[in-house]
Image 1 (cartoon, one colour):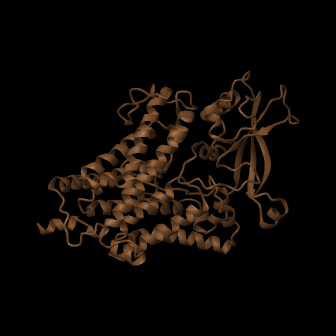
Image 2: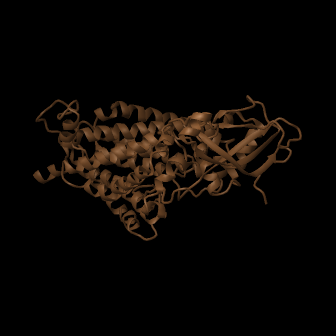
Image 3: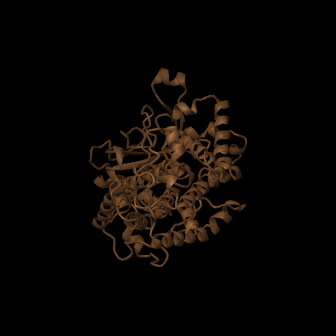
Length: 489
């Protein structure tokens, strides 16, 4: 039947290769991040132990493989399986078989990572977790090299990019005044959760250029997404604008895999002829079999259409949310975290407040004691240190440290963290860049609050400092194991 040929999109083979391998690569990063950090943060002896969380767990609401039992060893096996499957997909091995092979592989990644996210509590409460889950489920139905890419699935991936970009744009317009008067970038490069090596240079750009940045952001998020659904080559041009703006965000900050997954997903709107025109090394005939039809089995067509129908039905709630006056940001409307709503930075923090943790070996400490500062891998601390580029890797402890002054330092996990420092817990210390006591337990720890700002060019030439910091106050006075850390009150 000729009408069935519409469902095949042979001119999007390059897009499929980027989507499958790119999403799989980001799953690899996510599982690697979990393997390295989860036991210390959420493991059996972690800051928020999963076994304690599971004791009050609703089995019907949060699907997870850990619902019956959690051990650090089982977590590591889950991560190892995720790393293996994602590596095979990056190499393109499952894609060589029938379409059900990469389907099962991606659904396995989705289920394995959802099992982690659903017990990850505040350390996994980021929008890019559900974005990765939704992307993994949707990309699973792109098929294999034995079939053409399904057009309806590609459209649904474009719909995901639209929700990601347009949702973020609407959050900003409805949010802080700084987005409407074009001053948001006066602050954002300096106050974002985890600056990168070029963030200071971006912050020091002239203010008129910052206004141009904001205008460009509004154009890319509020106008361009509609053209992703346009005929070619307009859709490819729109995707190119999305990719360019996301690369600028990659260059000026550290937002885990948020920007990278937006880049990967945007390729769903890039056709092979356009990709070949931009980069002739990309073949027009990916498999070197011009004129050879790859007819999809009827069962595969039925399965992709069923998945399409499911995702279309689930789109009702996020579509309504996009145009709601009370727009939700980074919210899921079902327990499987499919077809979610996204958005970030509806308001921009005007000042950077950093929480600094110090320890001392003195028996009876005061301000004249030898207080030594703990160093974190990503968050600012040492005023001379150049911020590192970590994305797409996700430093979960550092990110939550940024939220403390915006909420309260009196978080359960943070007091648990201070207790681990007093014990010189090796798992916890491995999350840090610098332990000033070389593995020995301090007698006391304290928490101080500082105002940080980027040093100007003249200040940097004179001092070599990239940051200028000013002590504000001491939100948590000295604590010791004799005075057990715990939330006051």
